Image 1 (spheres, rainbow, N blue to C red):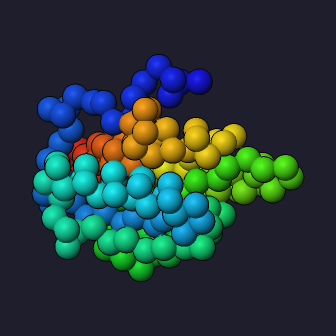
Image 2 (spheres, helix red, strand yellow):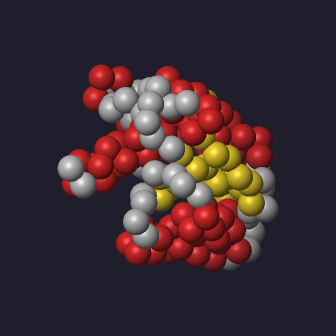
Length: 164
């Protein structure tokens, strides 16, 4: 597992563009909010650390991770933002529900990236246990929200560099 070798919160601060003029949408699942709330806080704090203004960070919630695709698509169509961070957490249970939710959300986010005009950042944690999720939500492996924020900033910069 790649995360075992890489702390999600460690990165070269100077390699990240200034986010002062960037606008972000964050769609976050209410399900497992003890995890997604920590990921959300990590993303917001990291965006601000790189210059993003609070008024340029729009946060909306959806009931679960499967709804992230719809939420992200609605933000894409109705909000003036430069990137969307989709945050969710699915923990494996005893039924195949885990597989369907993970596959659907992953495929939906991938499709939005392939067909949309702004990047949608994959912030869906899929783990076998709550402990693994906690490790990735500010625990011993860092915070996936930090990584998502950095990715969003870099992807906006990438898009802007193509339009110069």
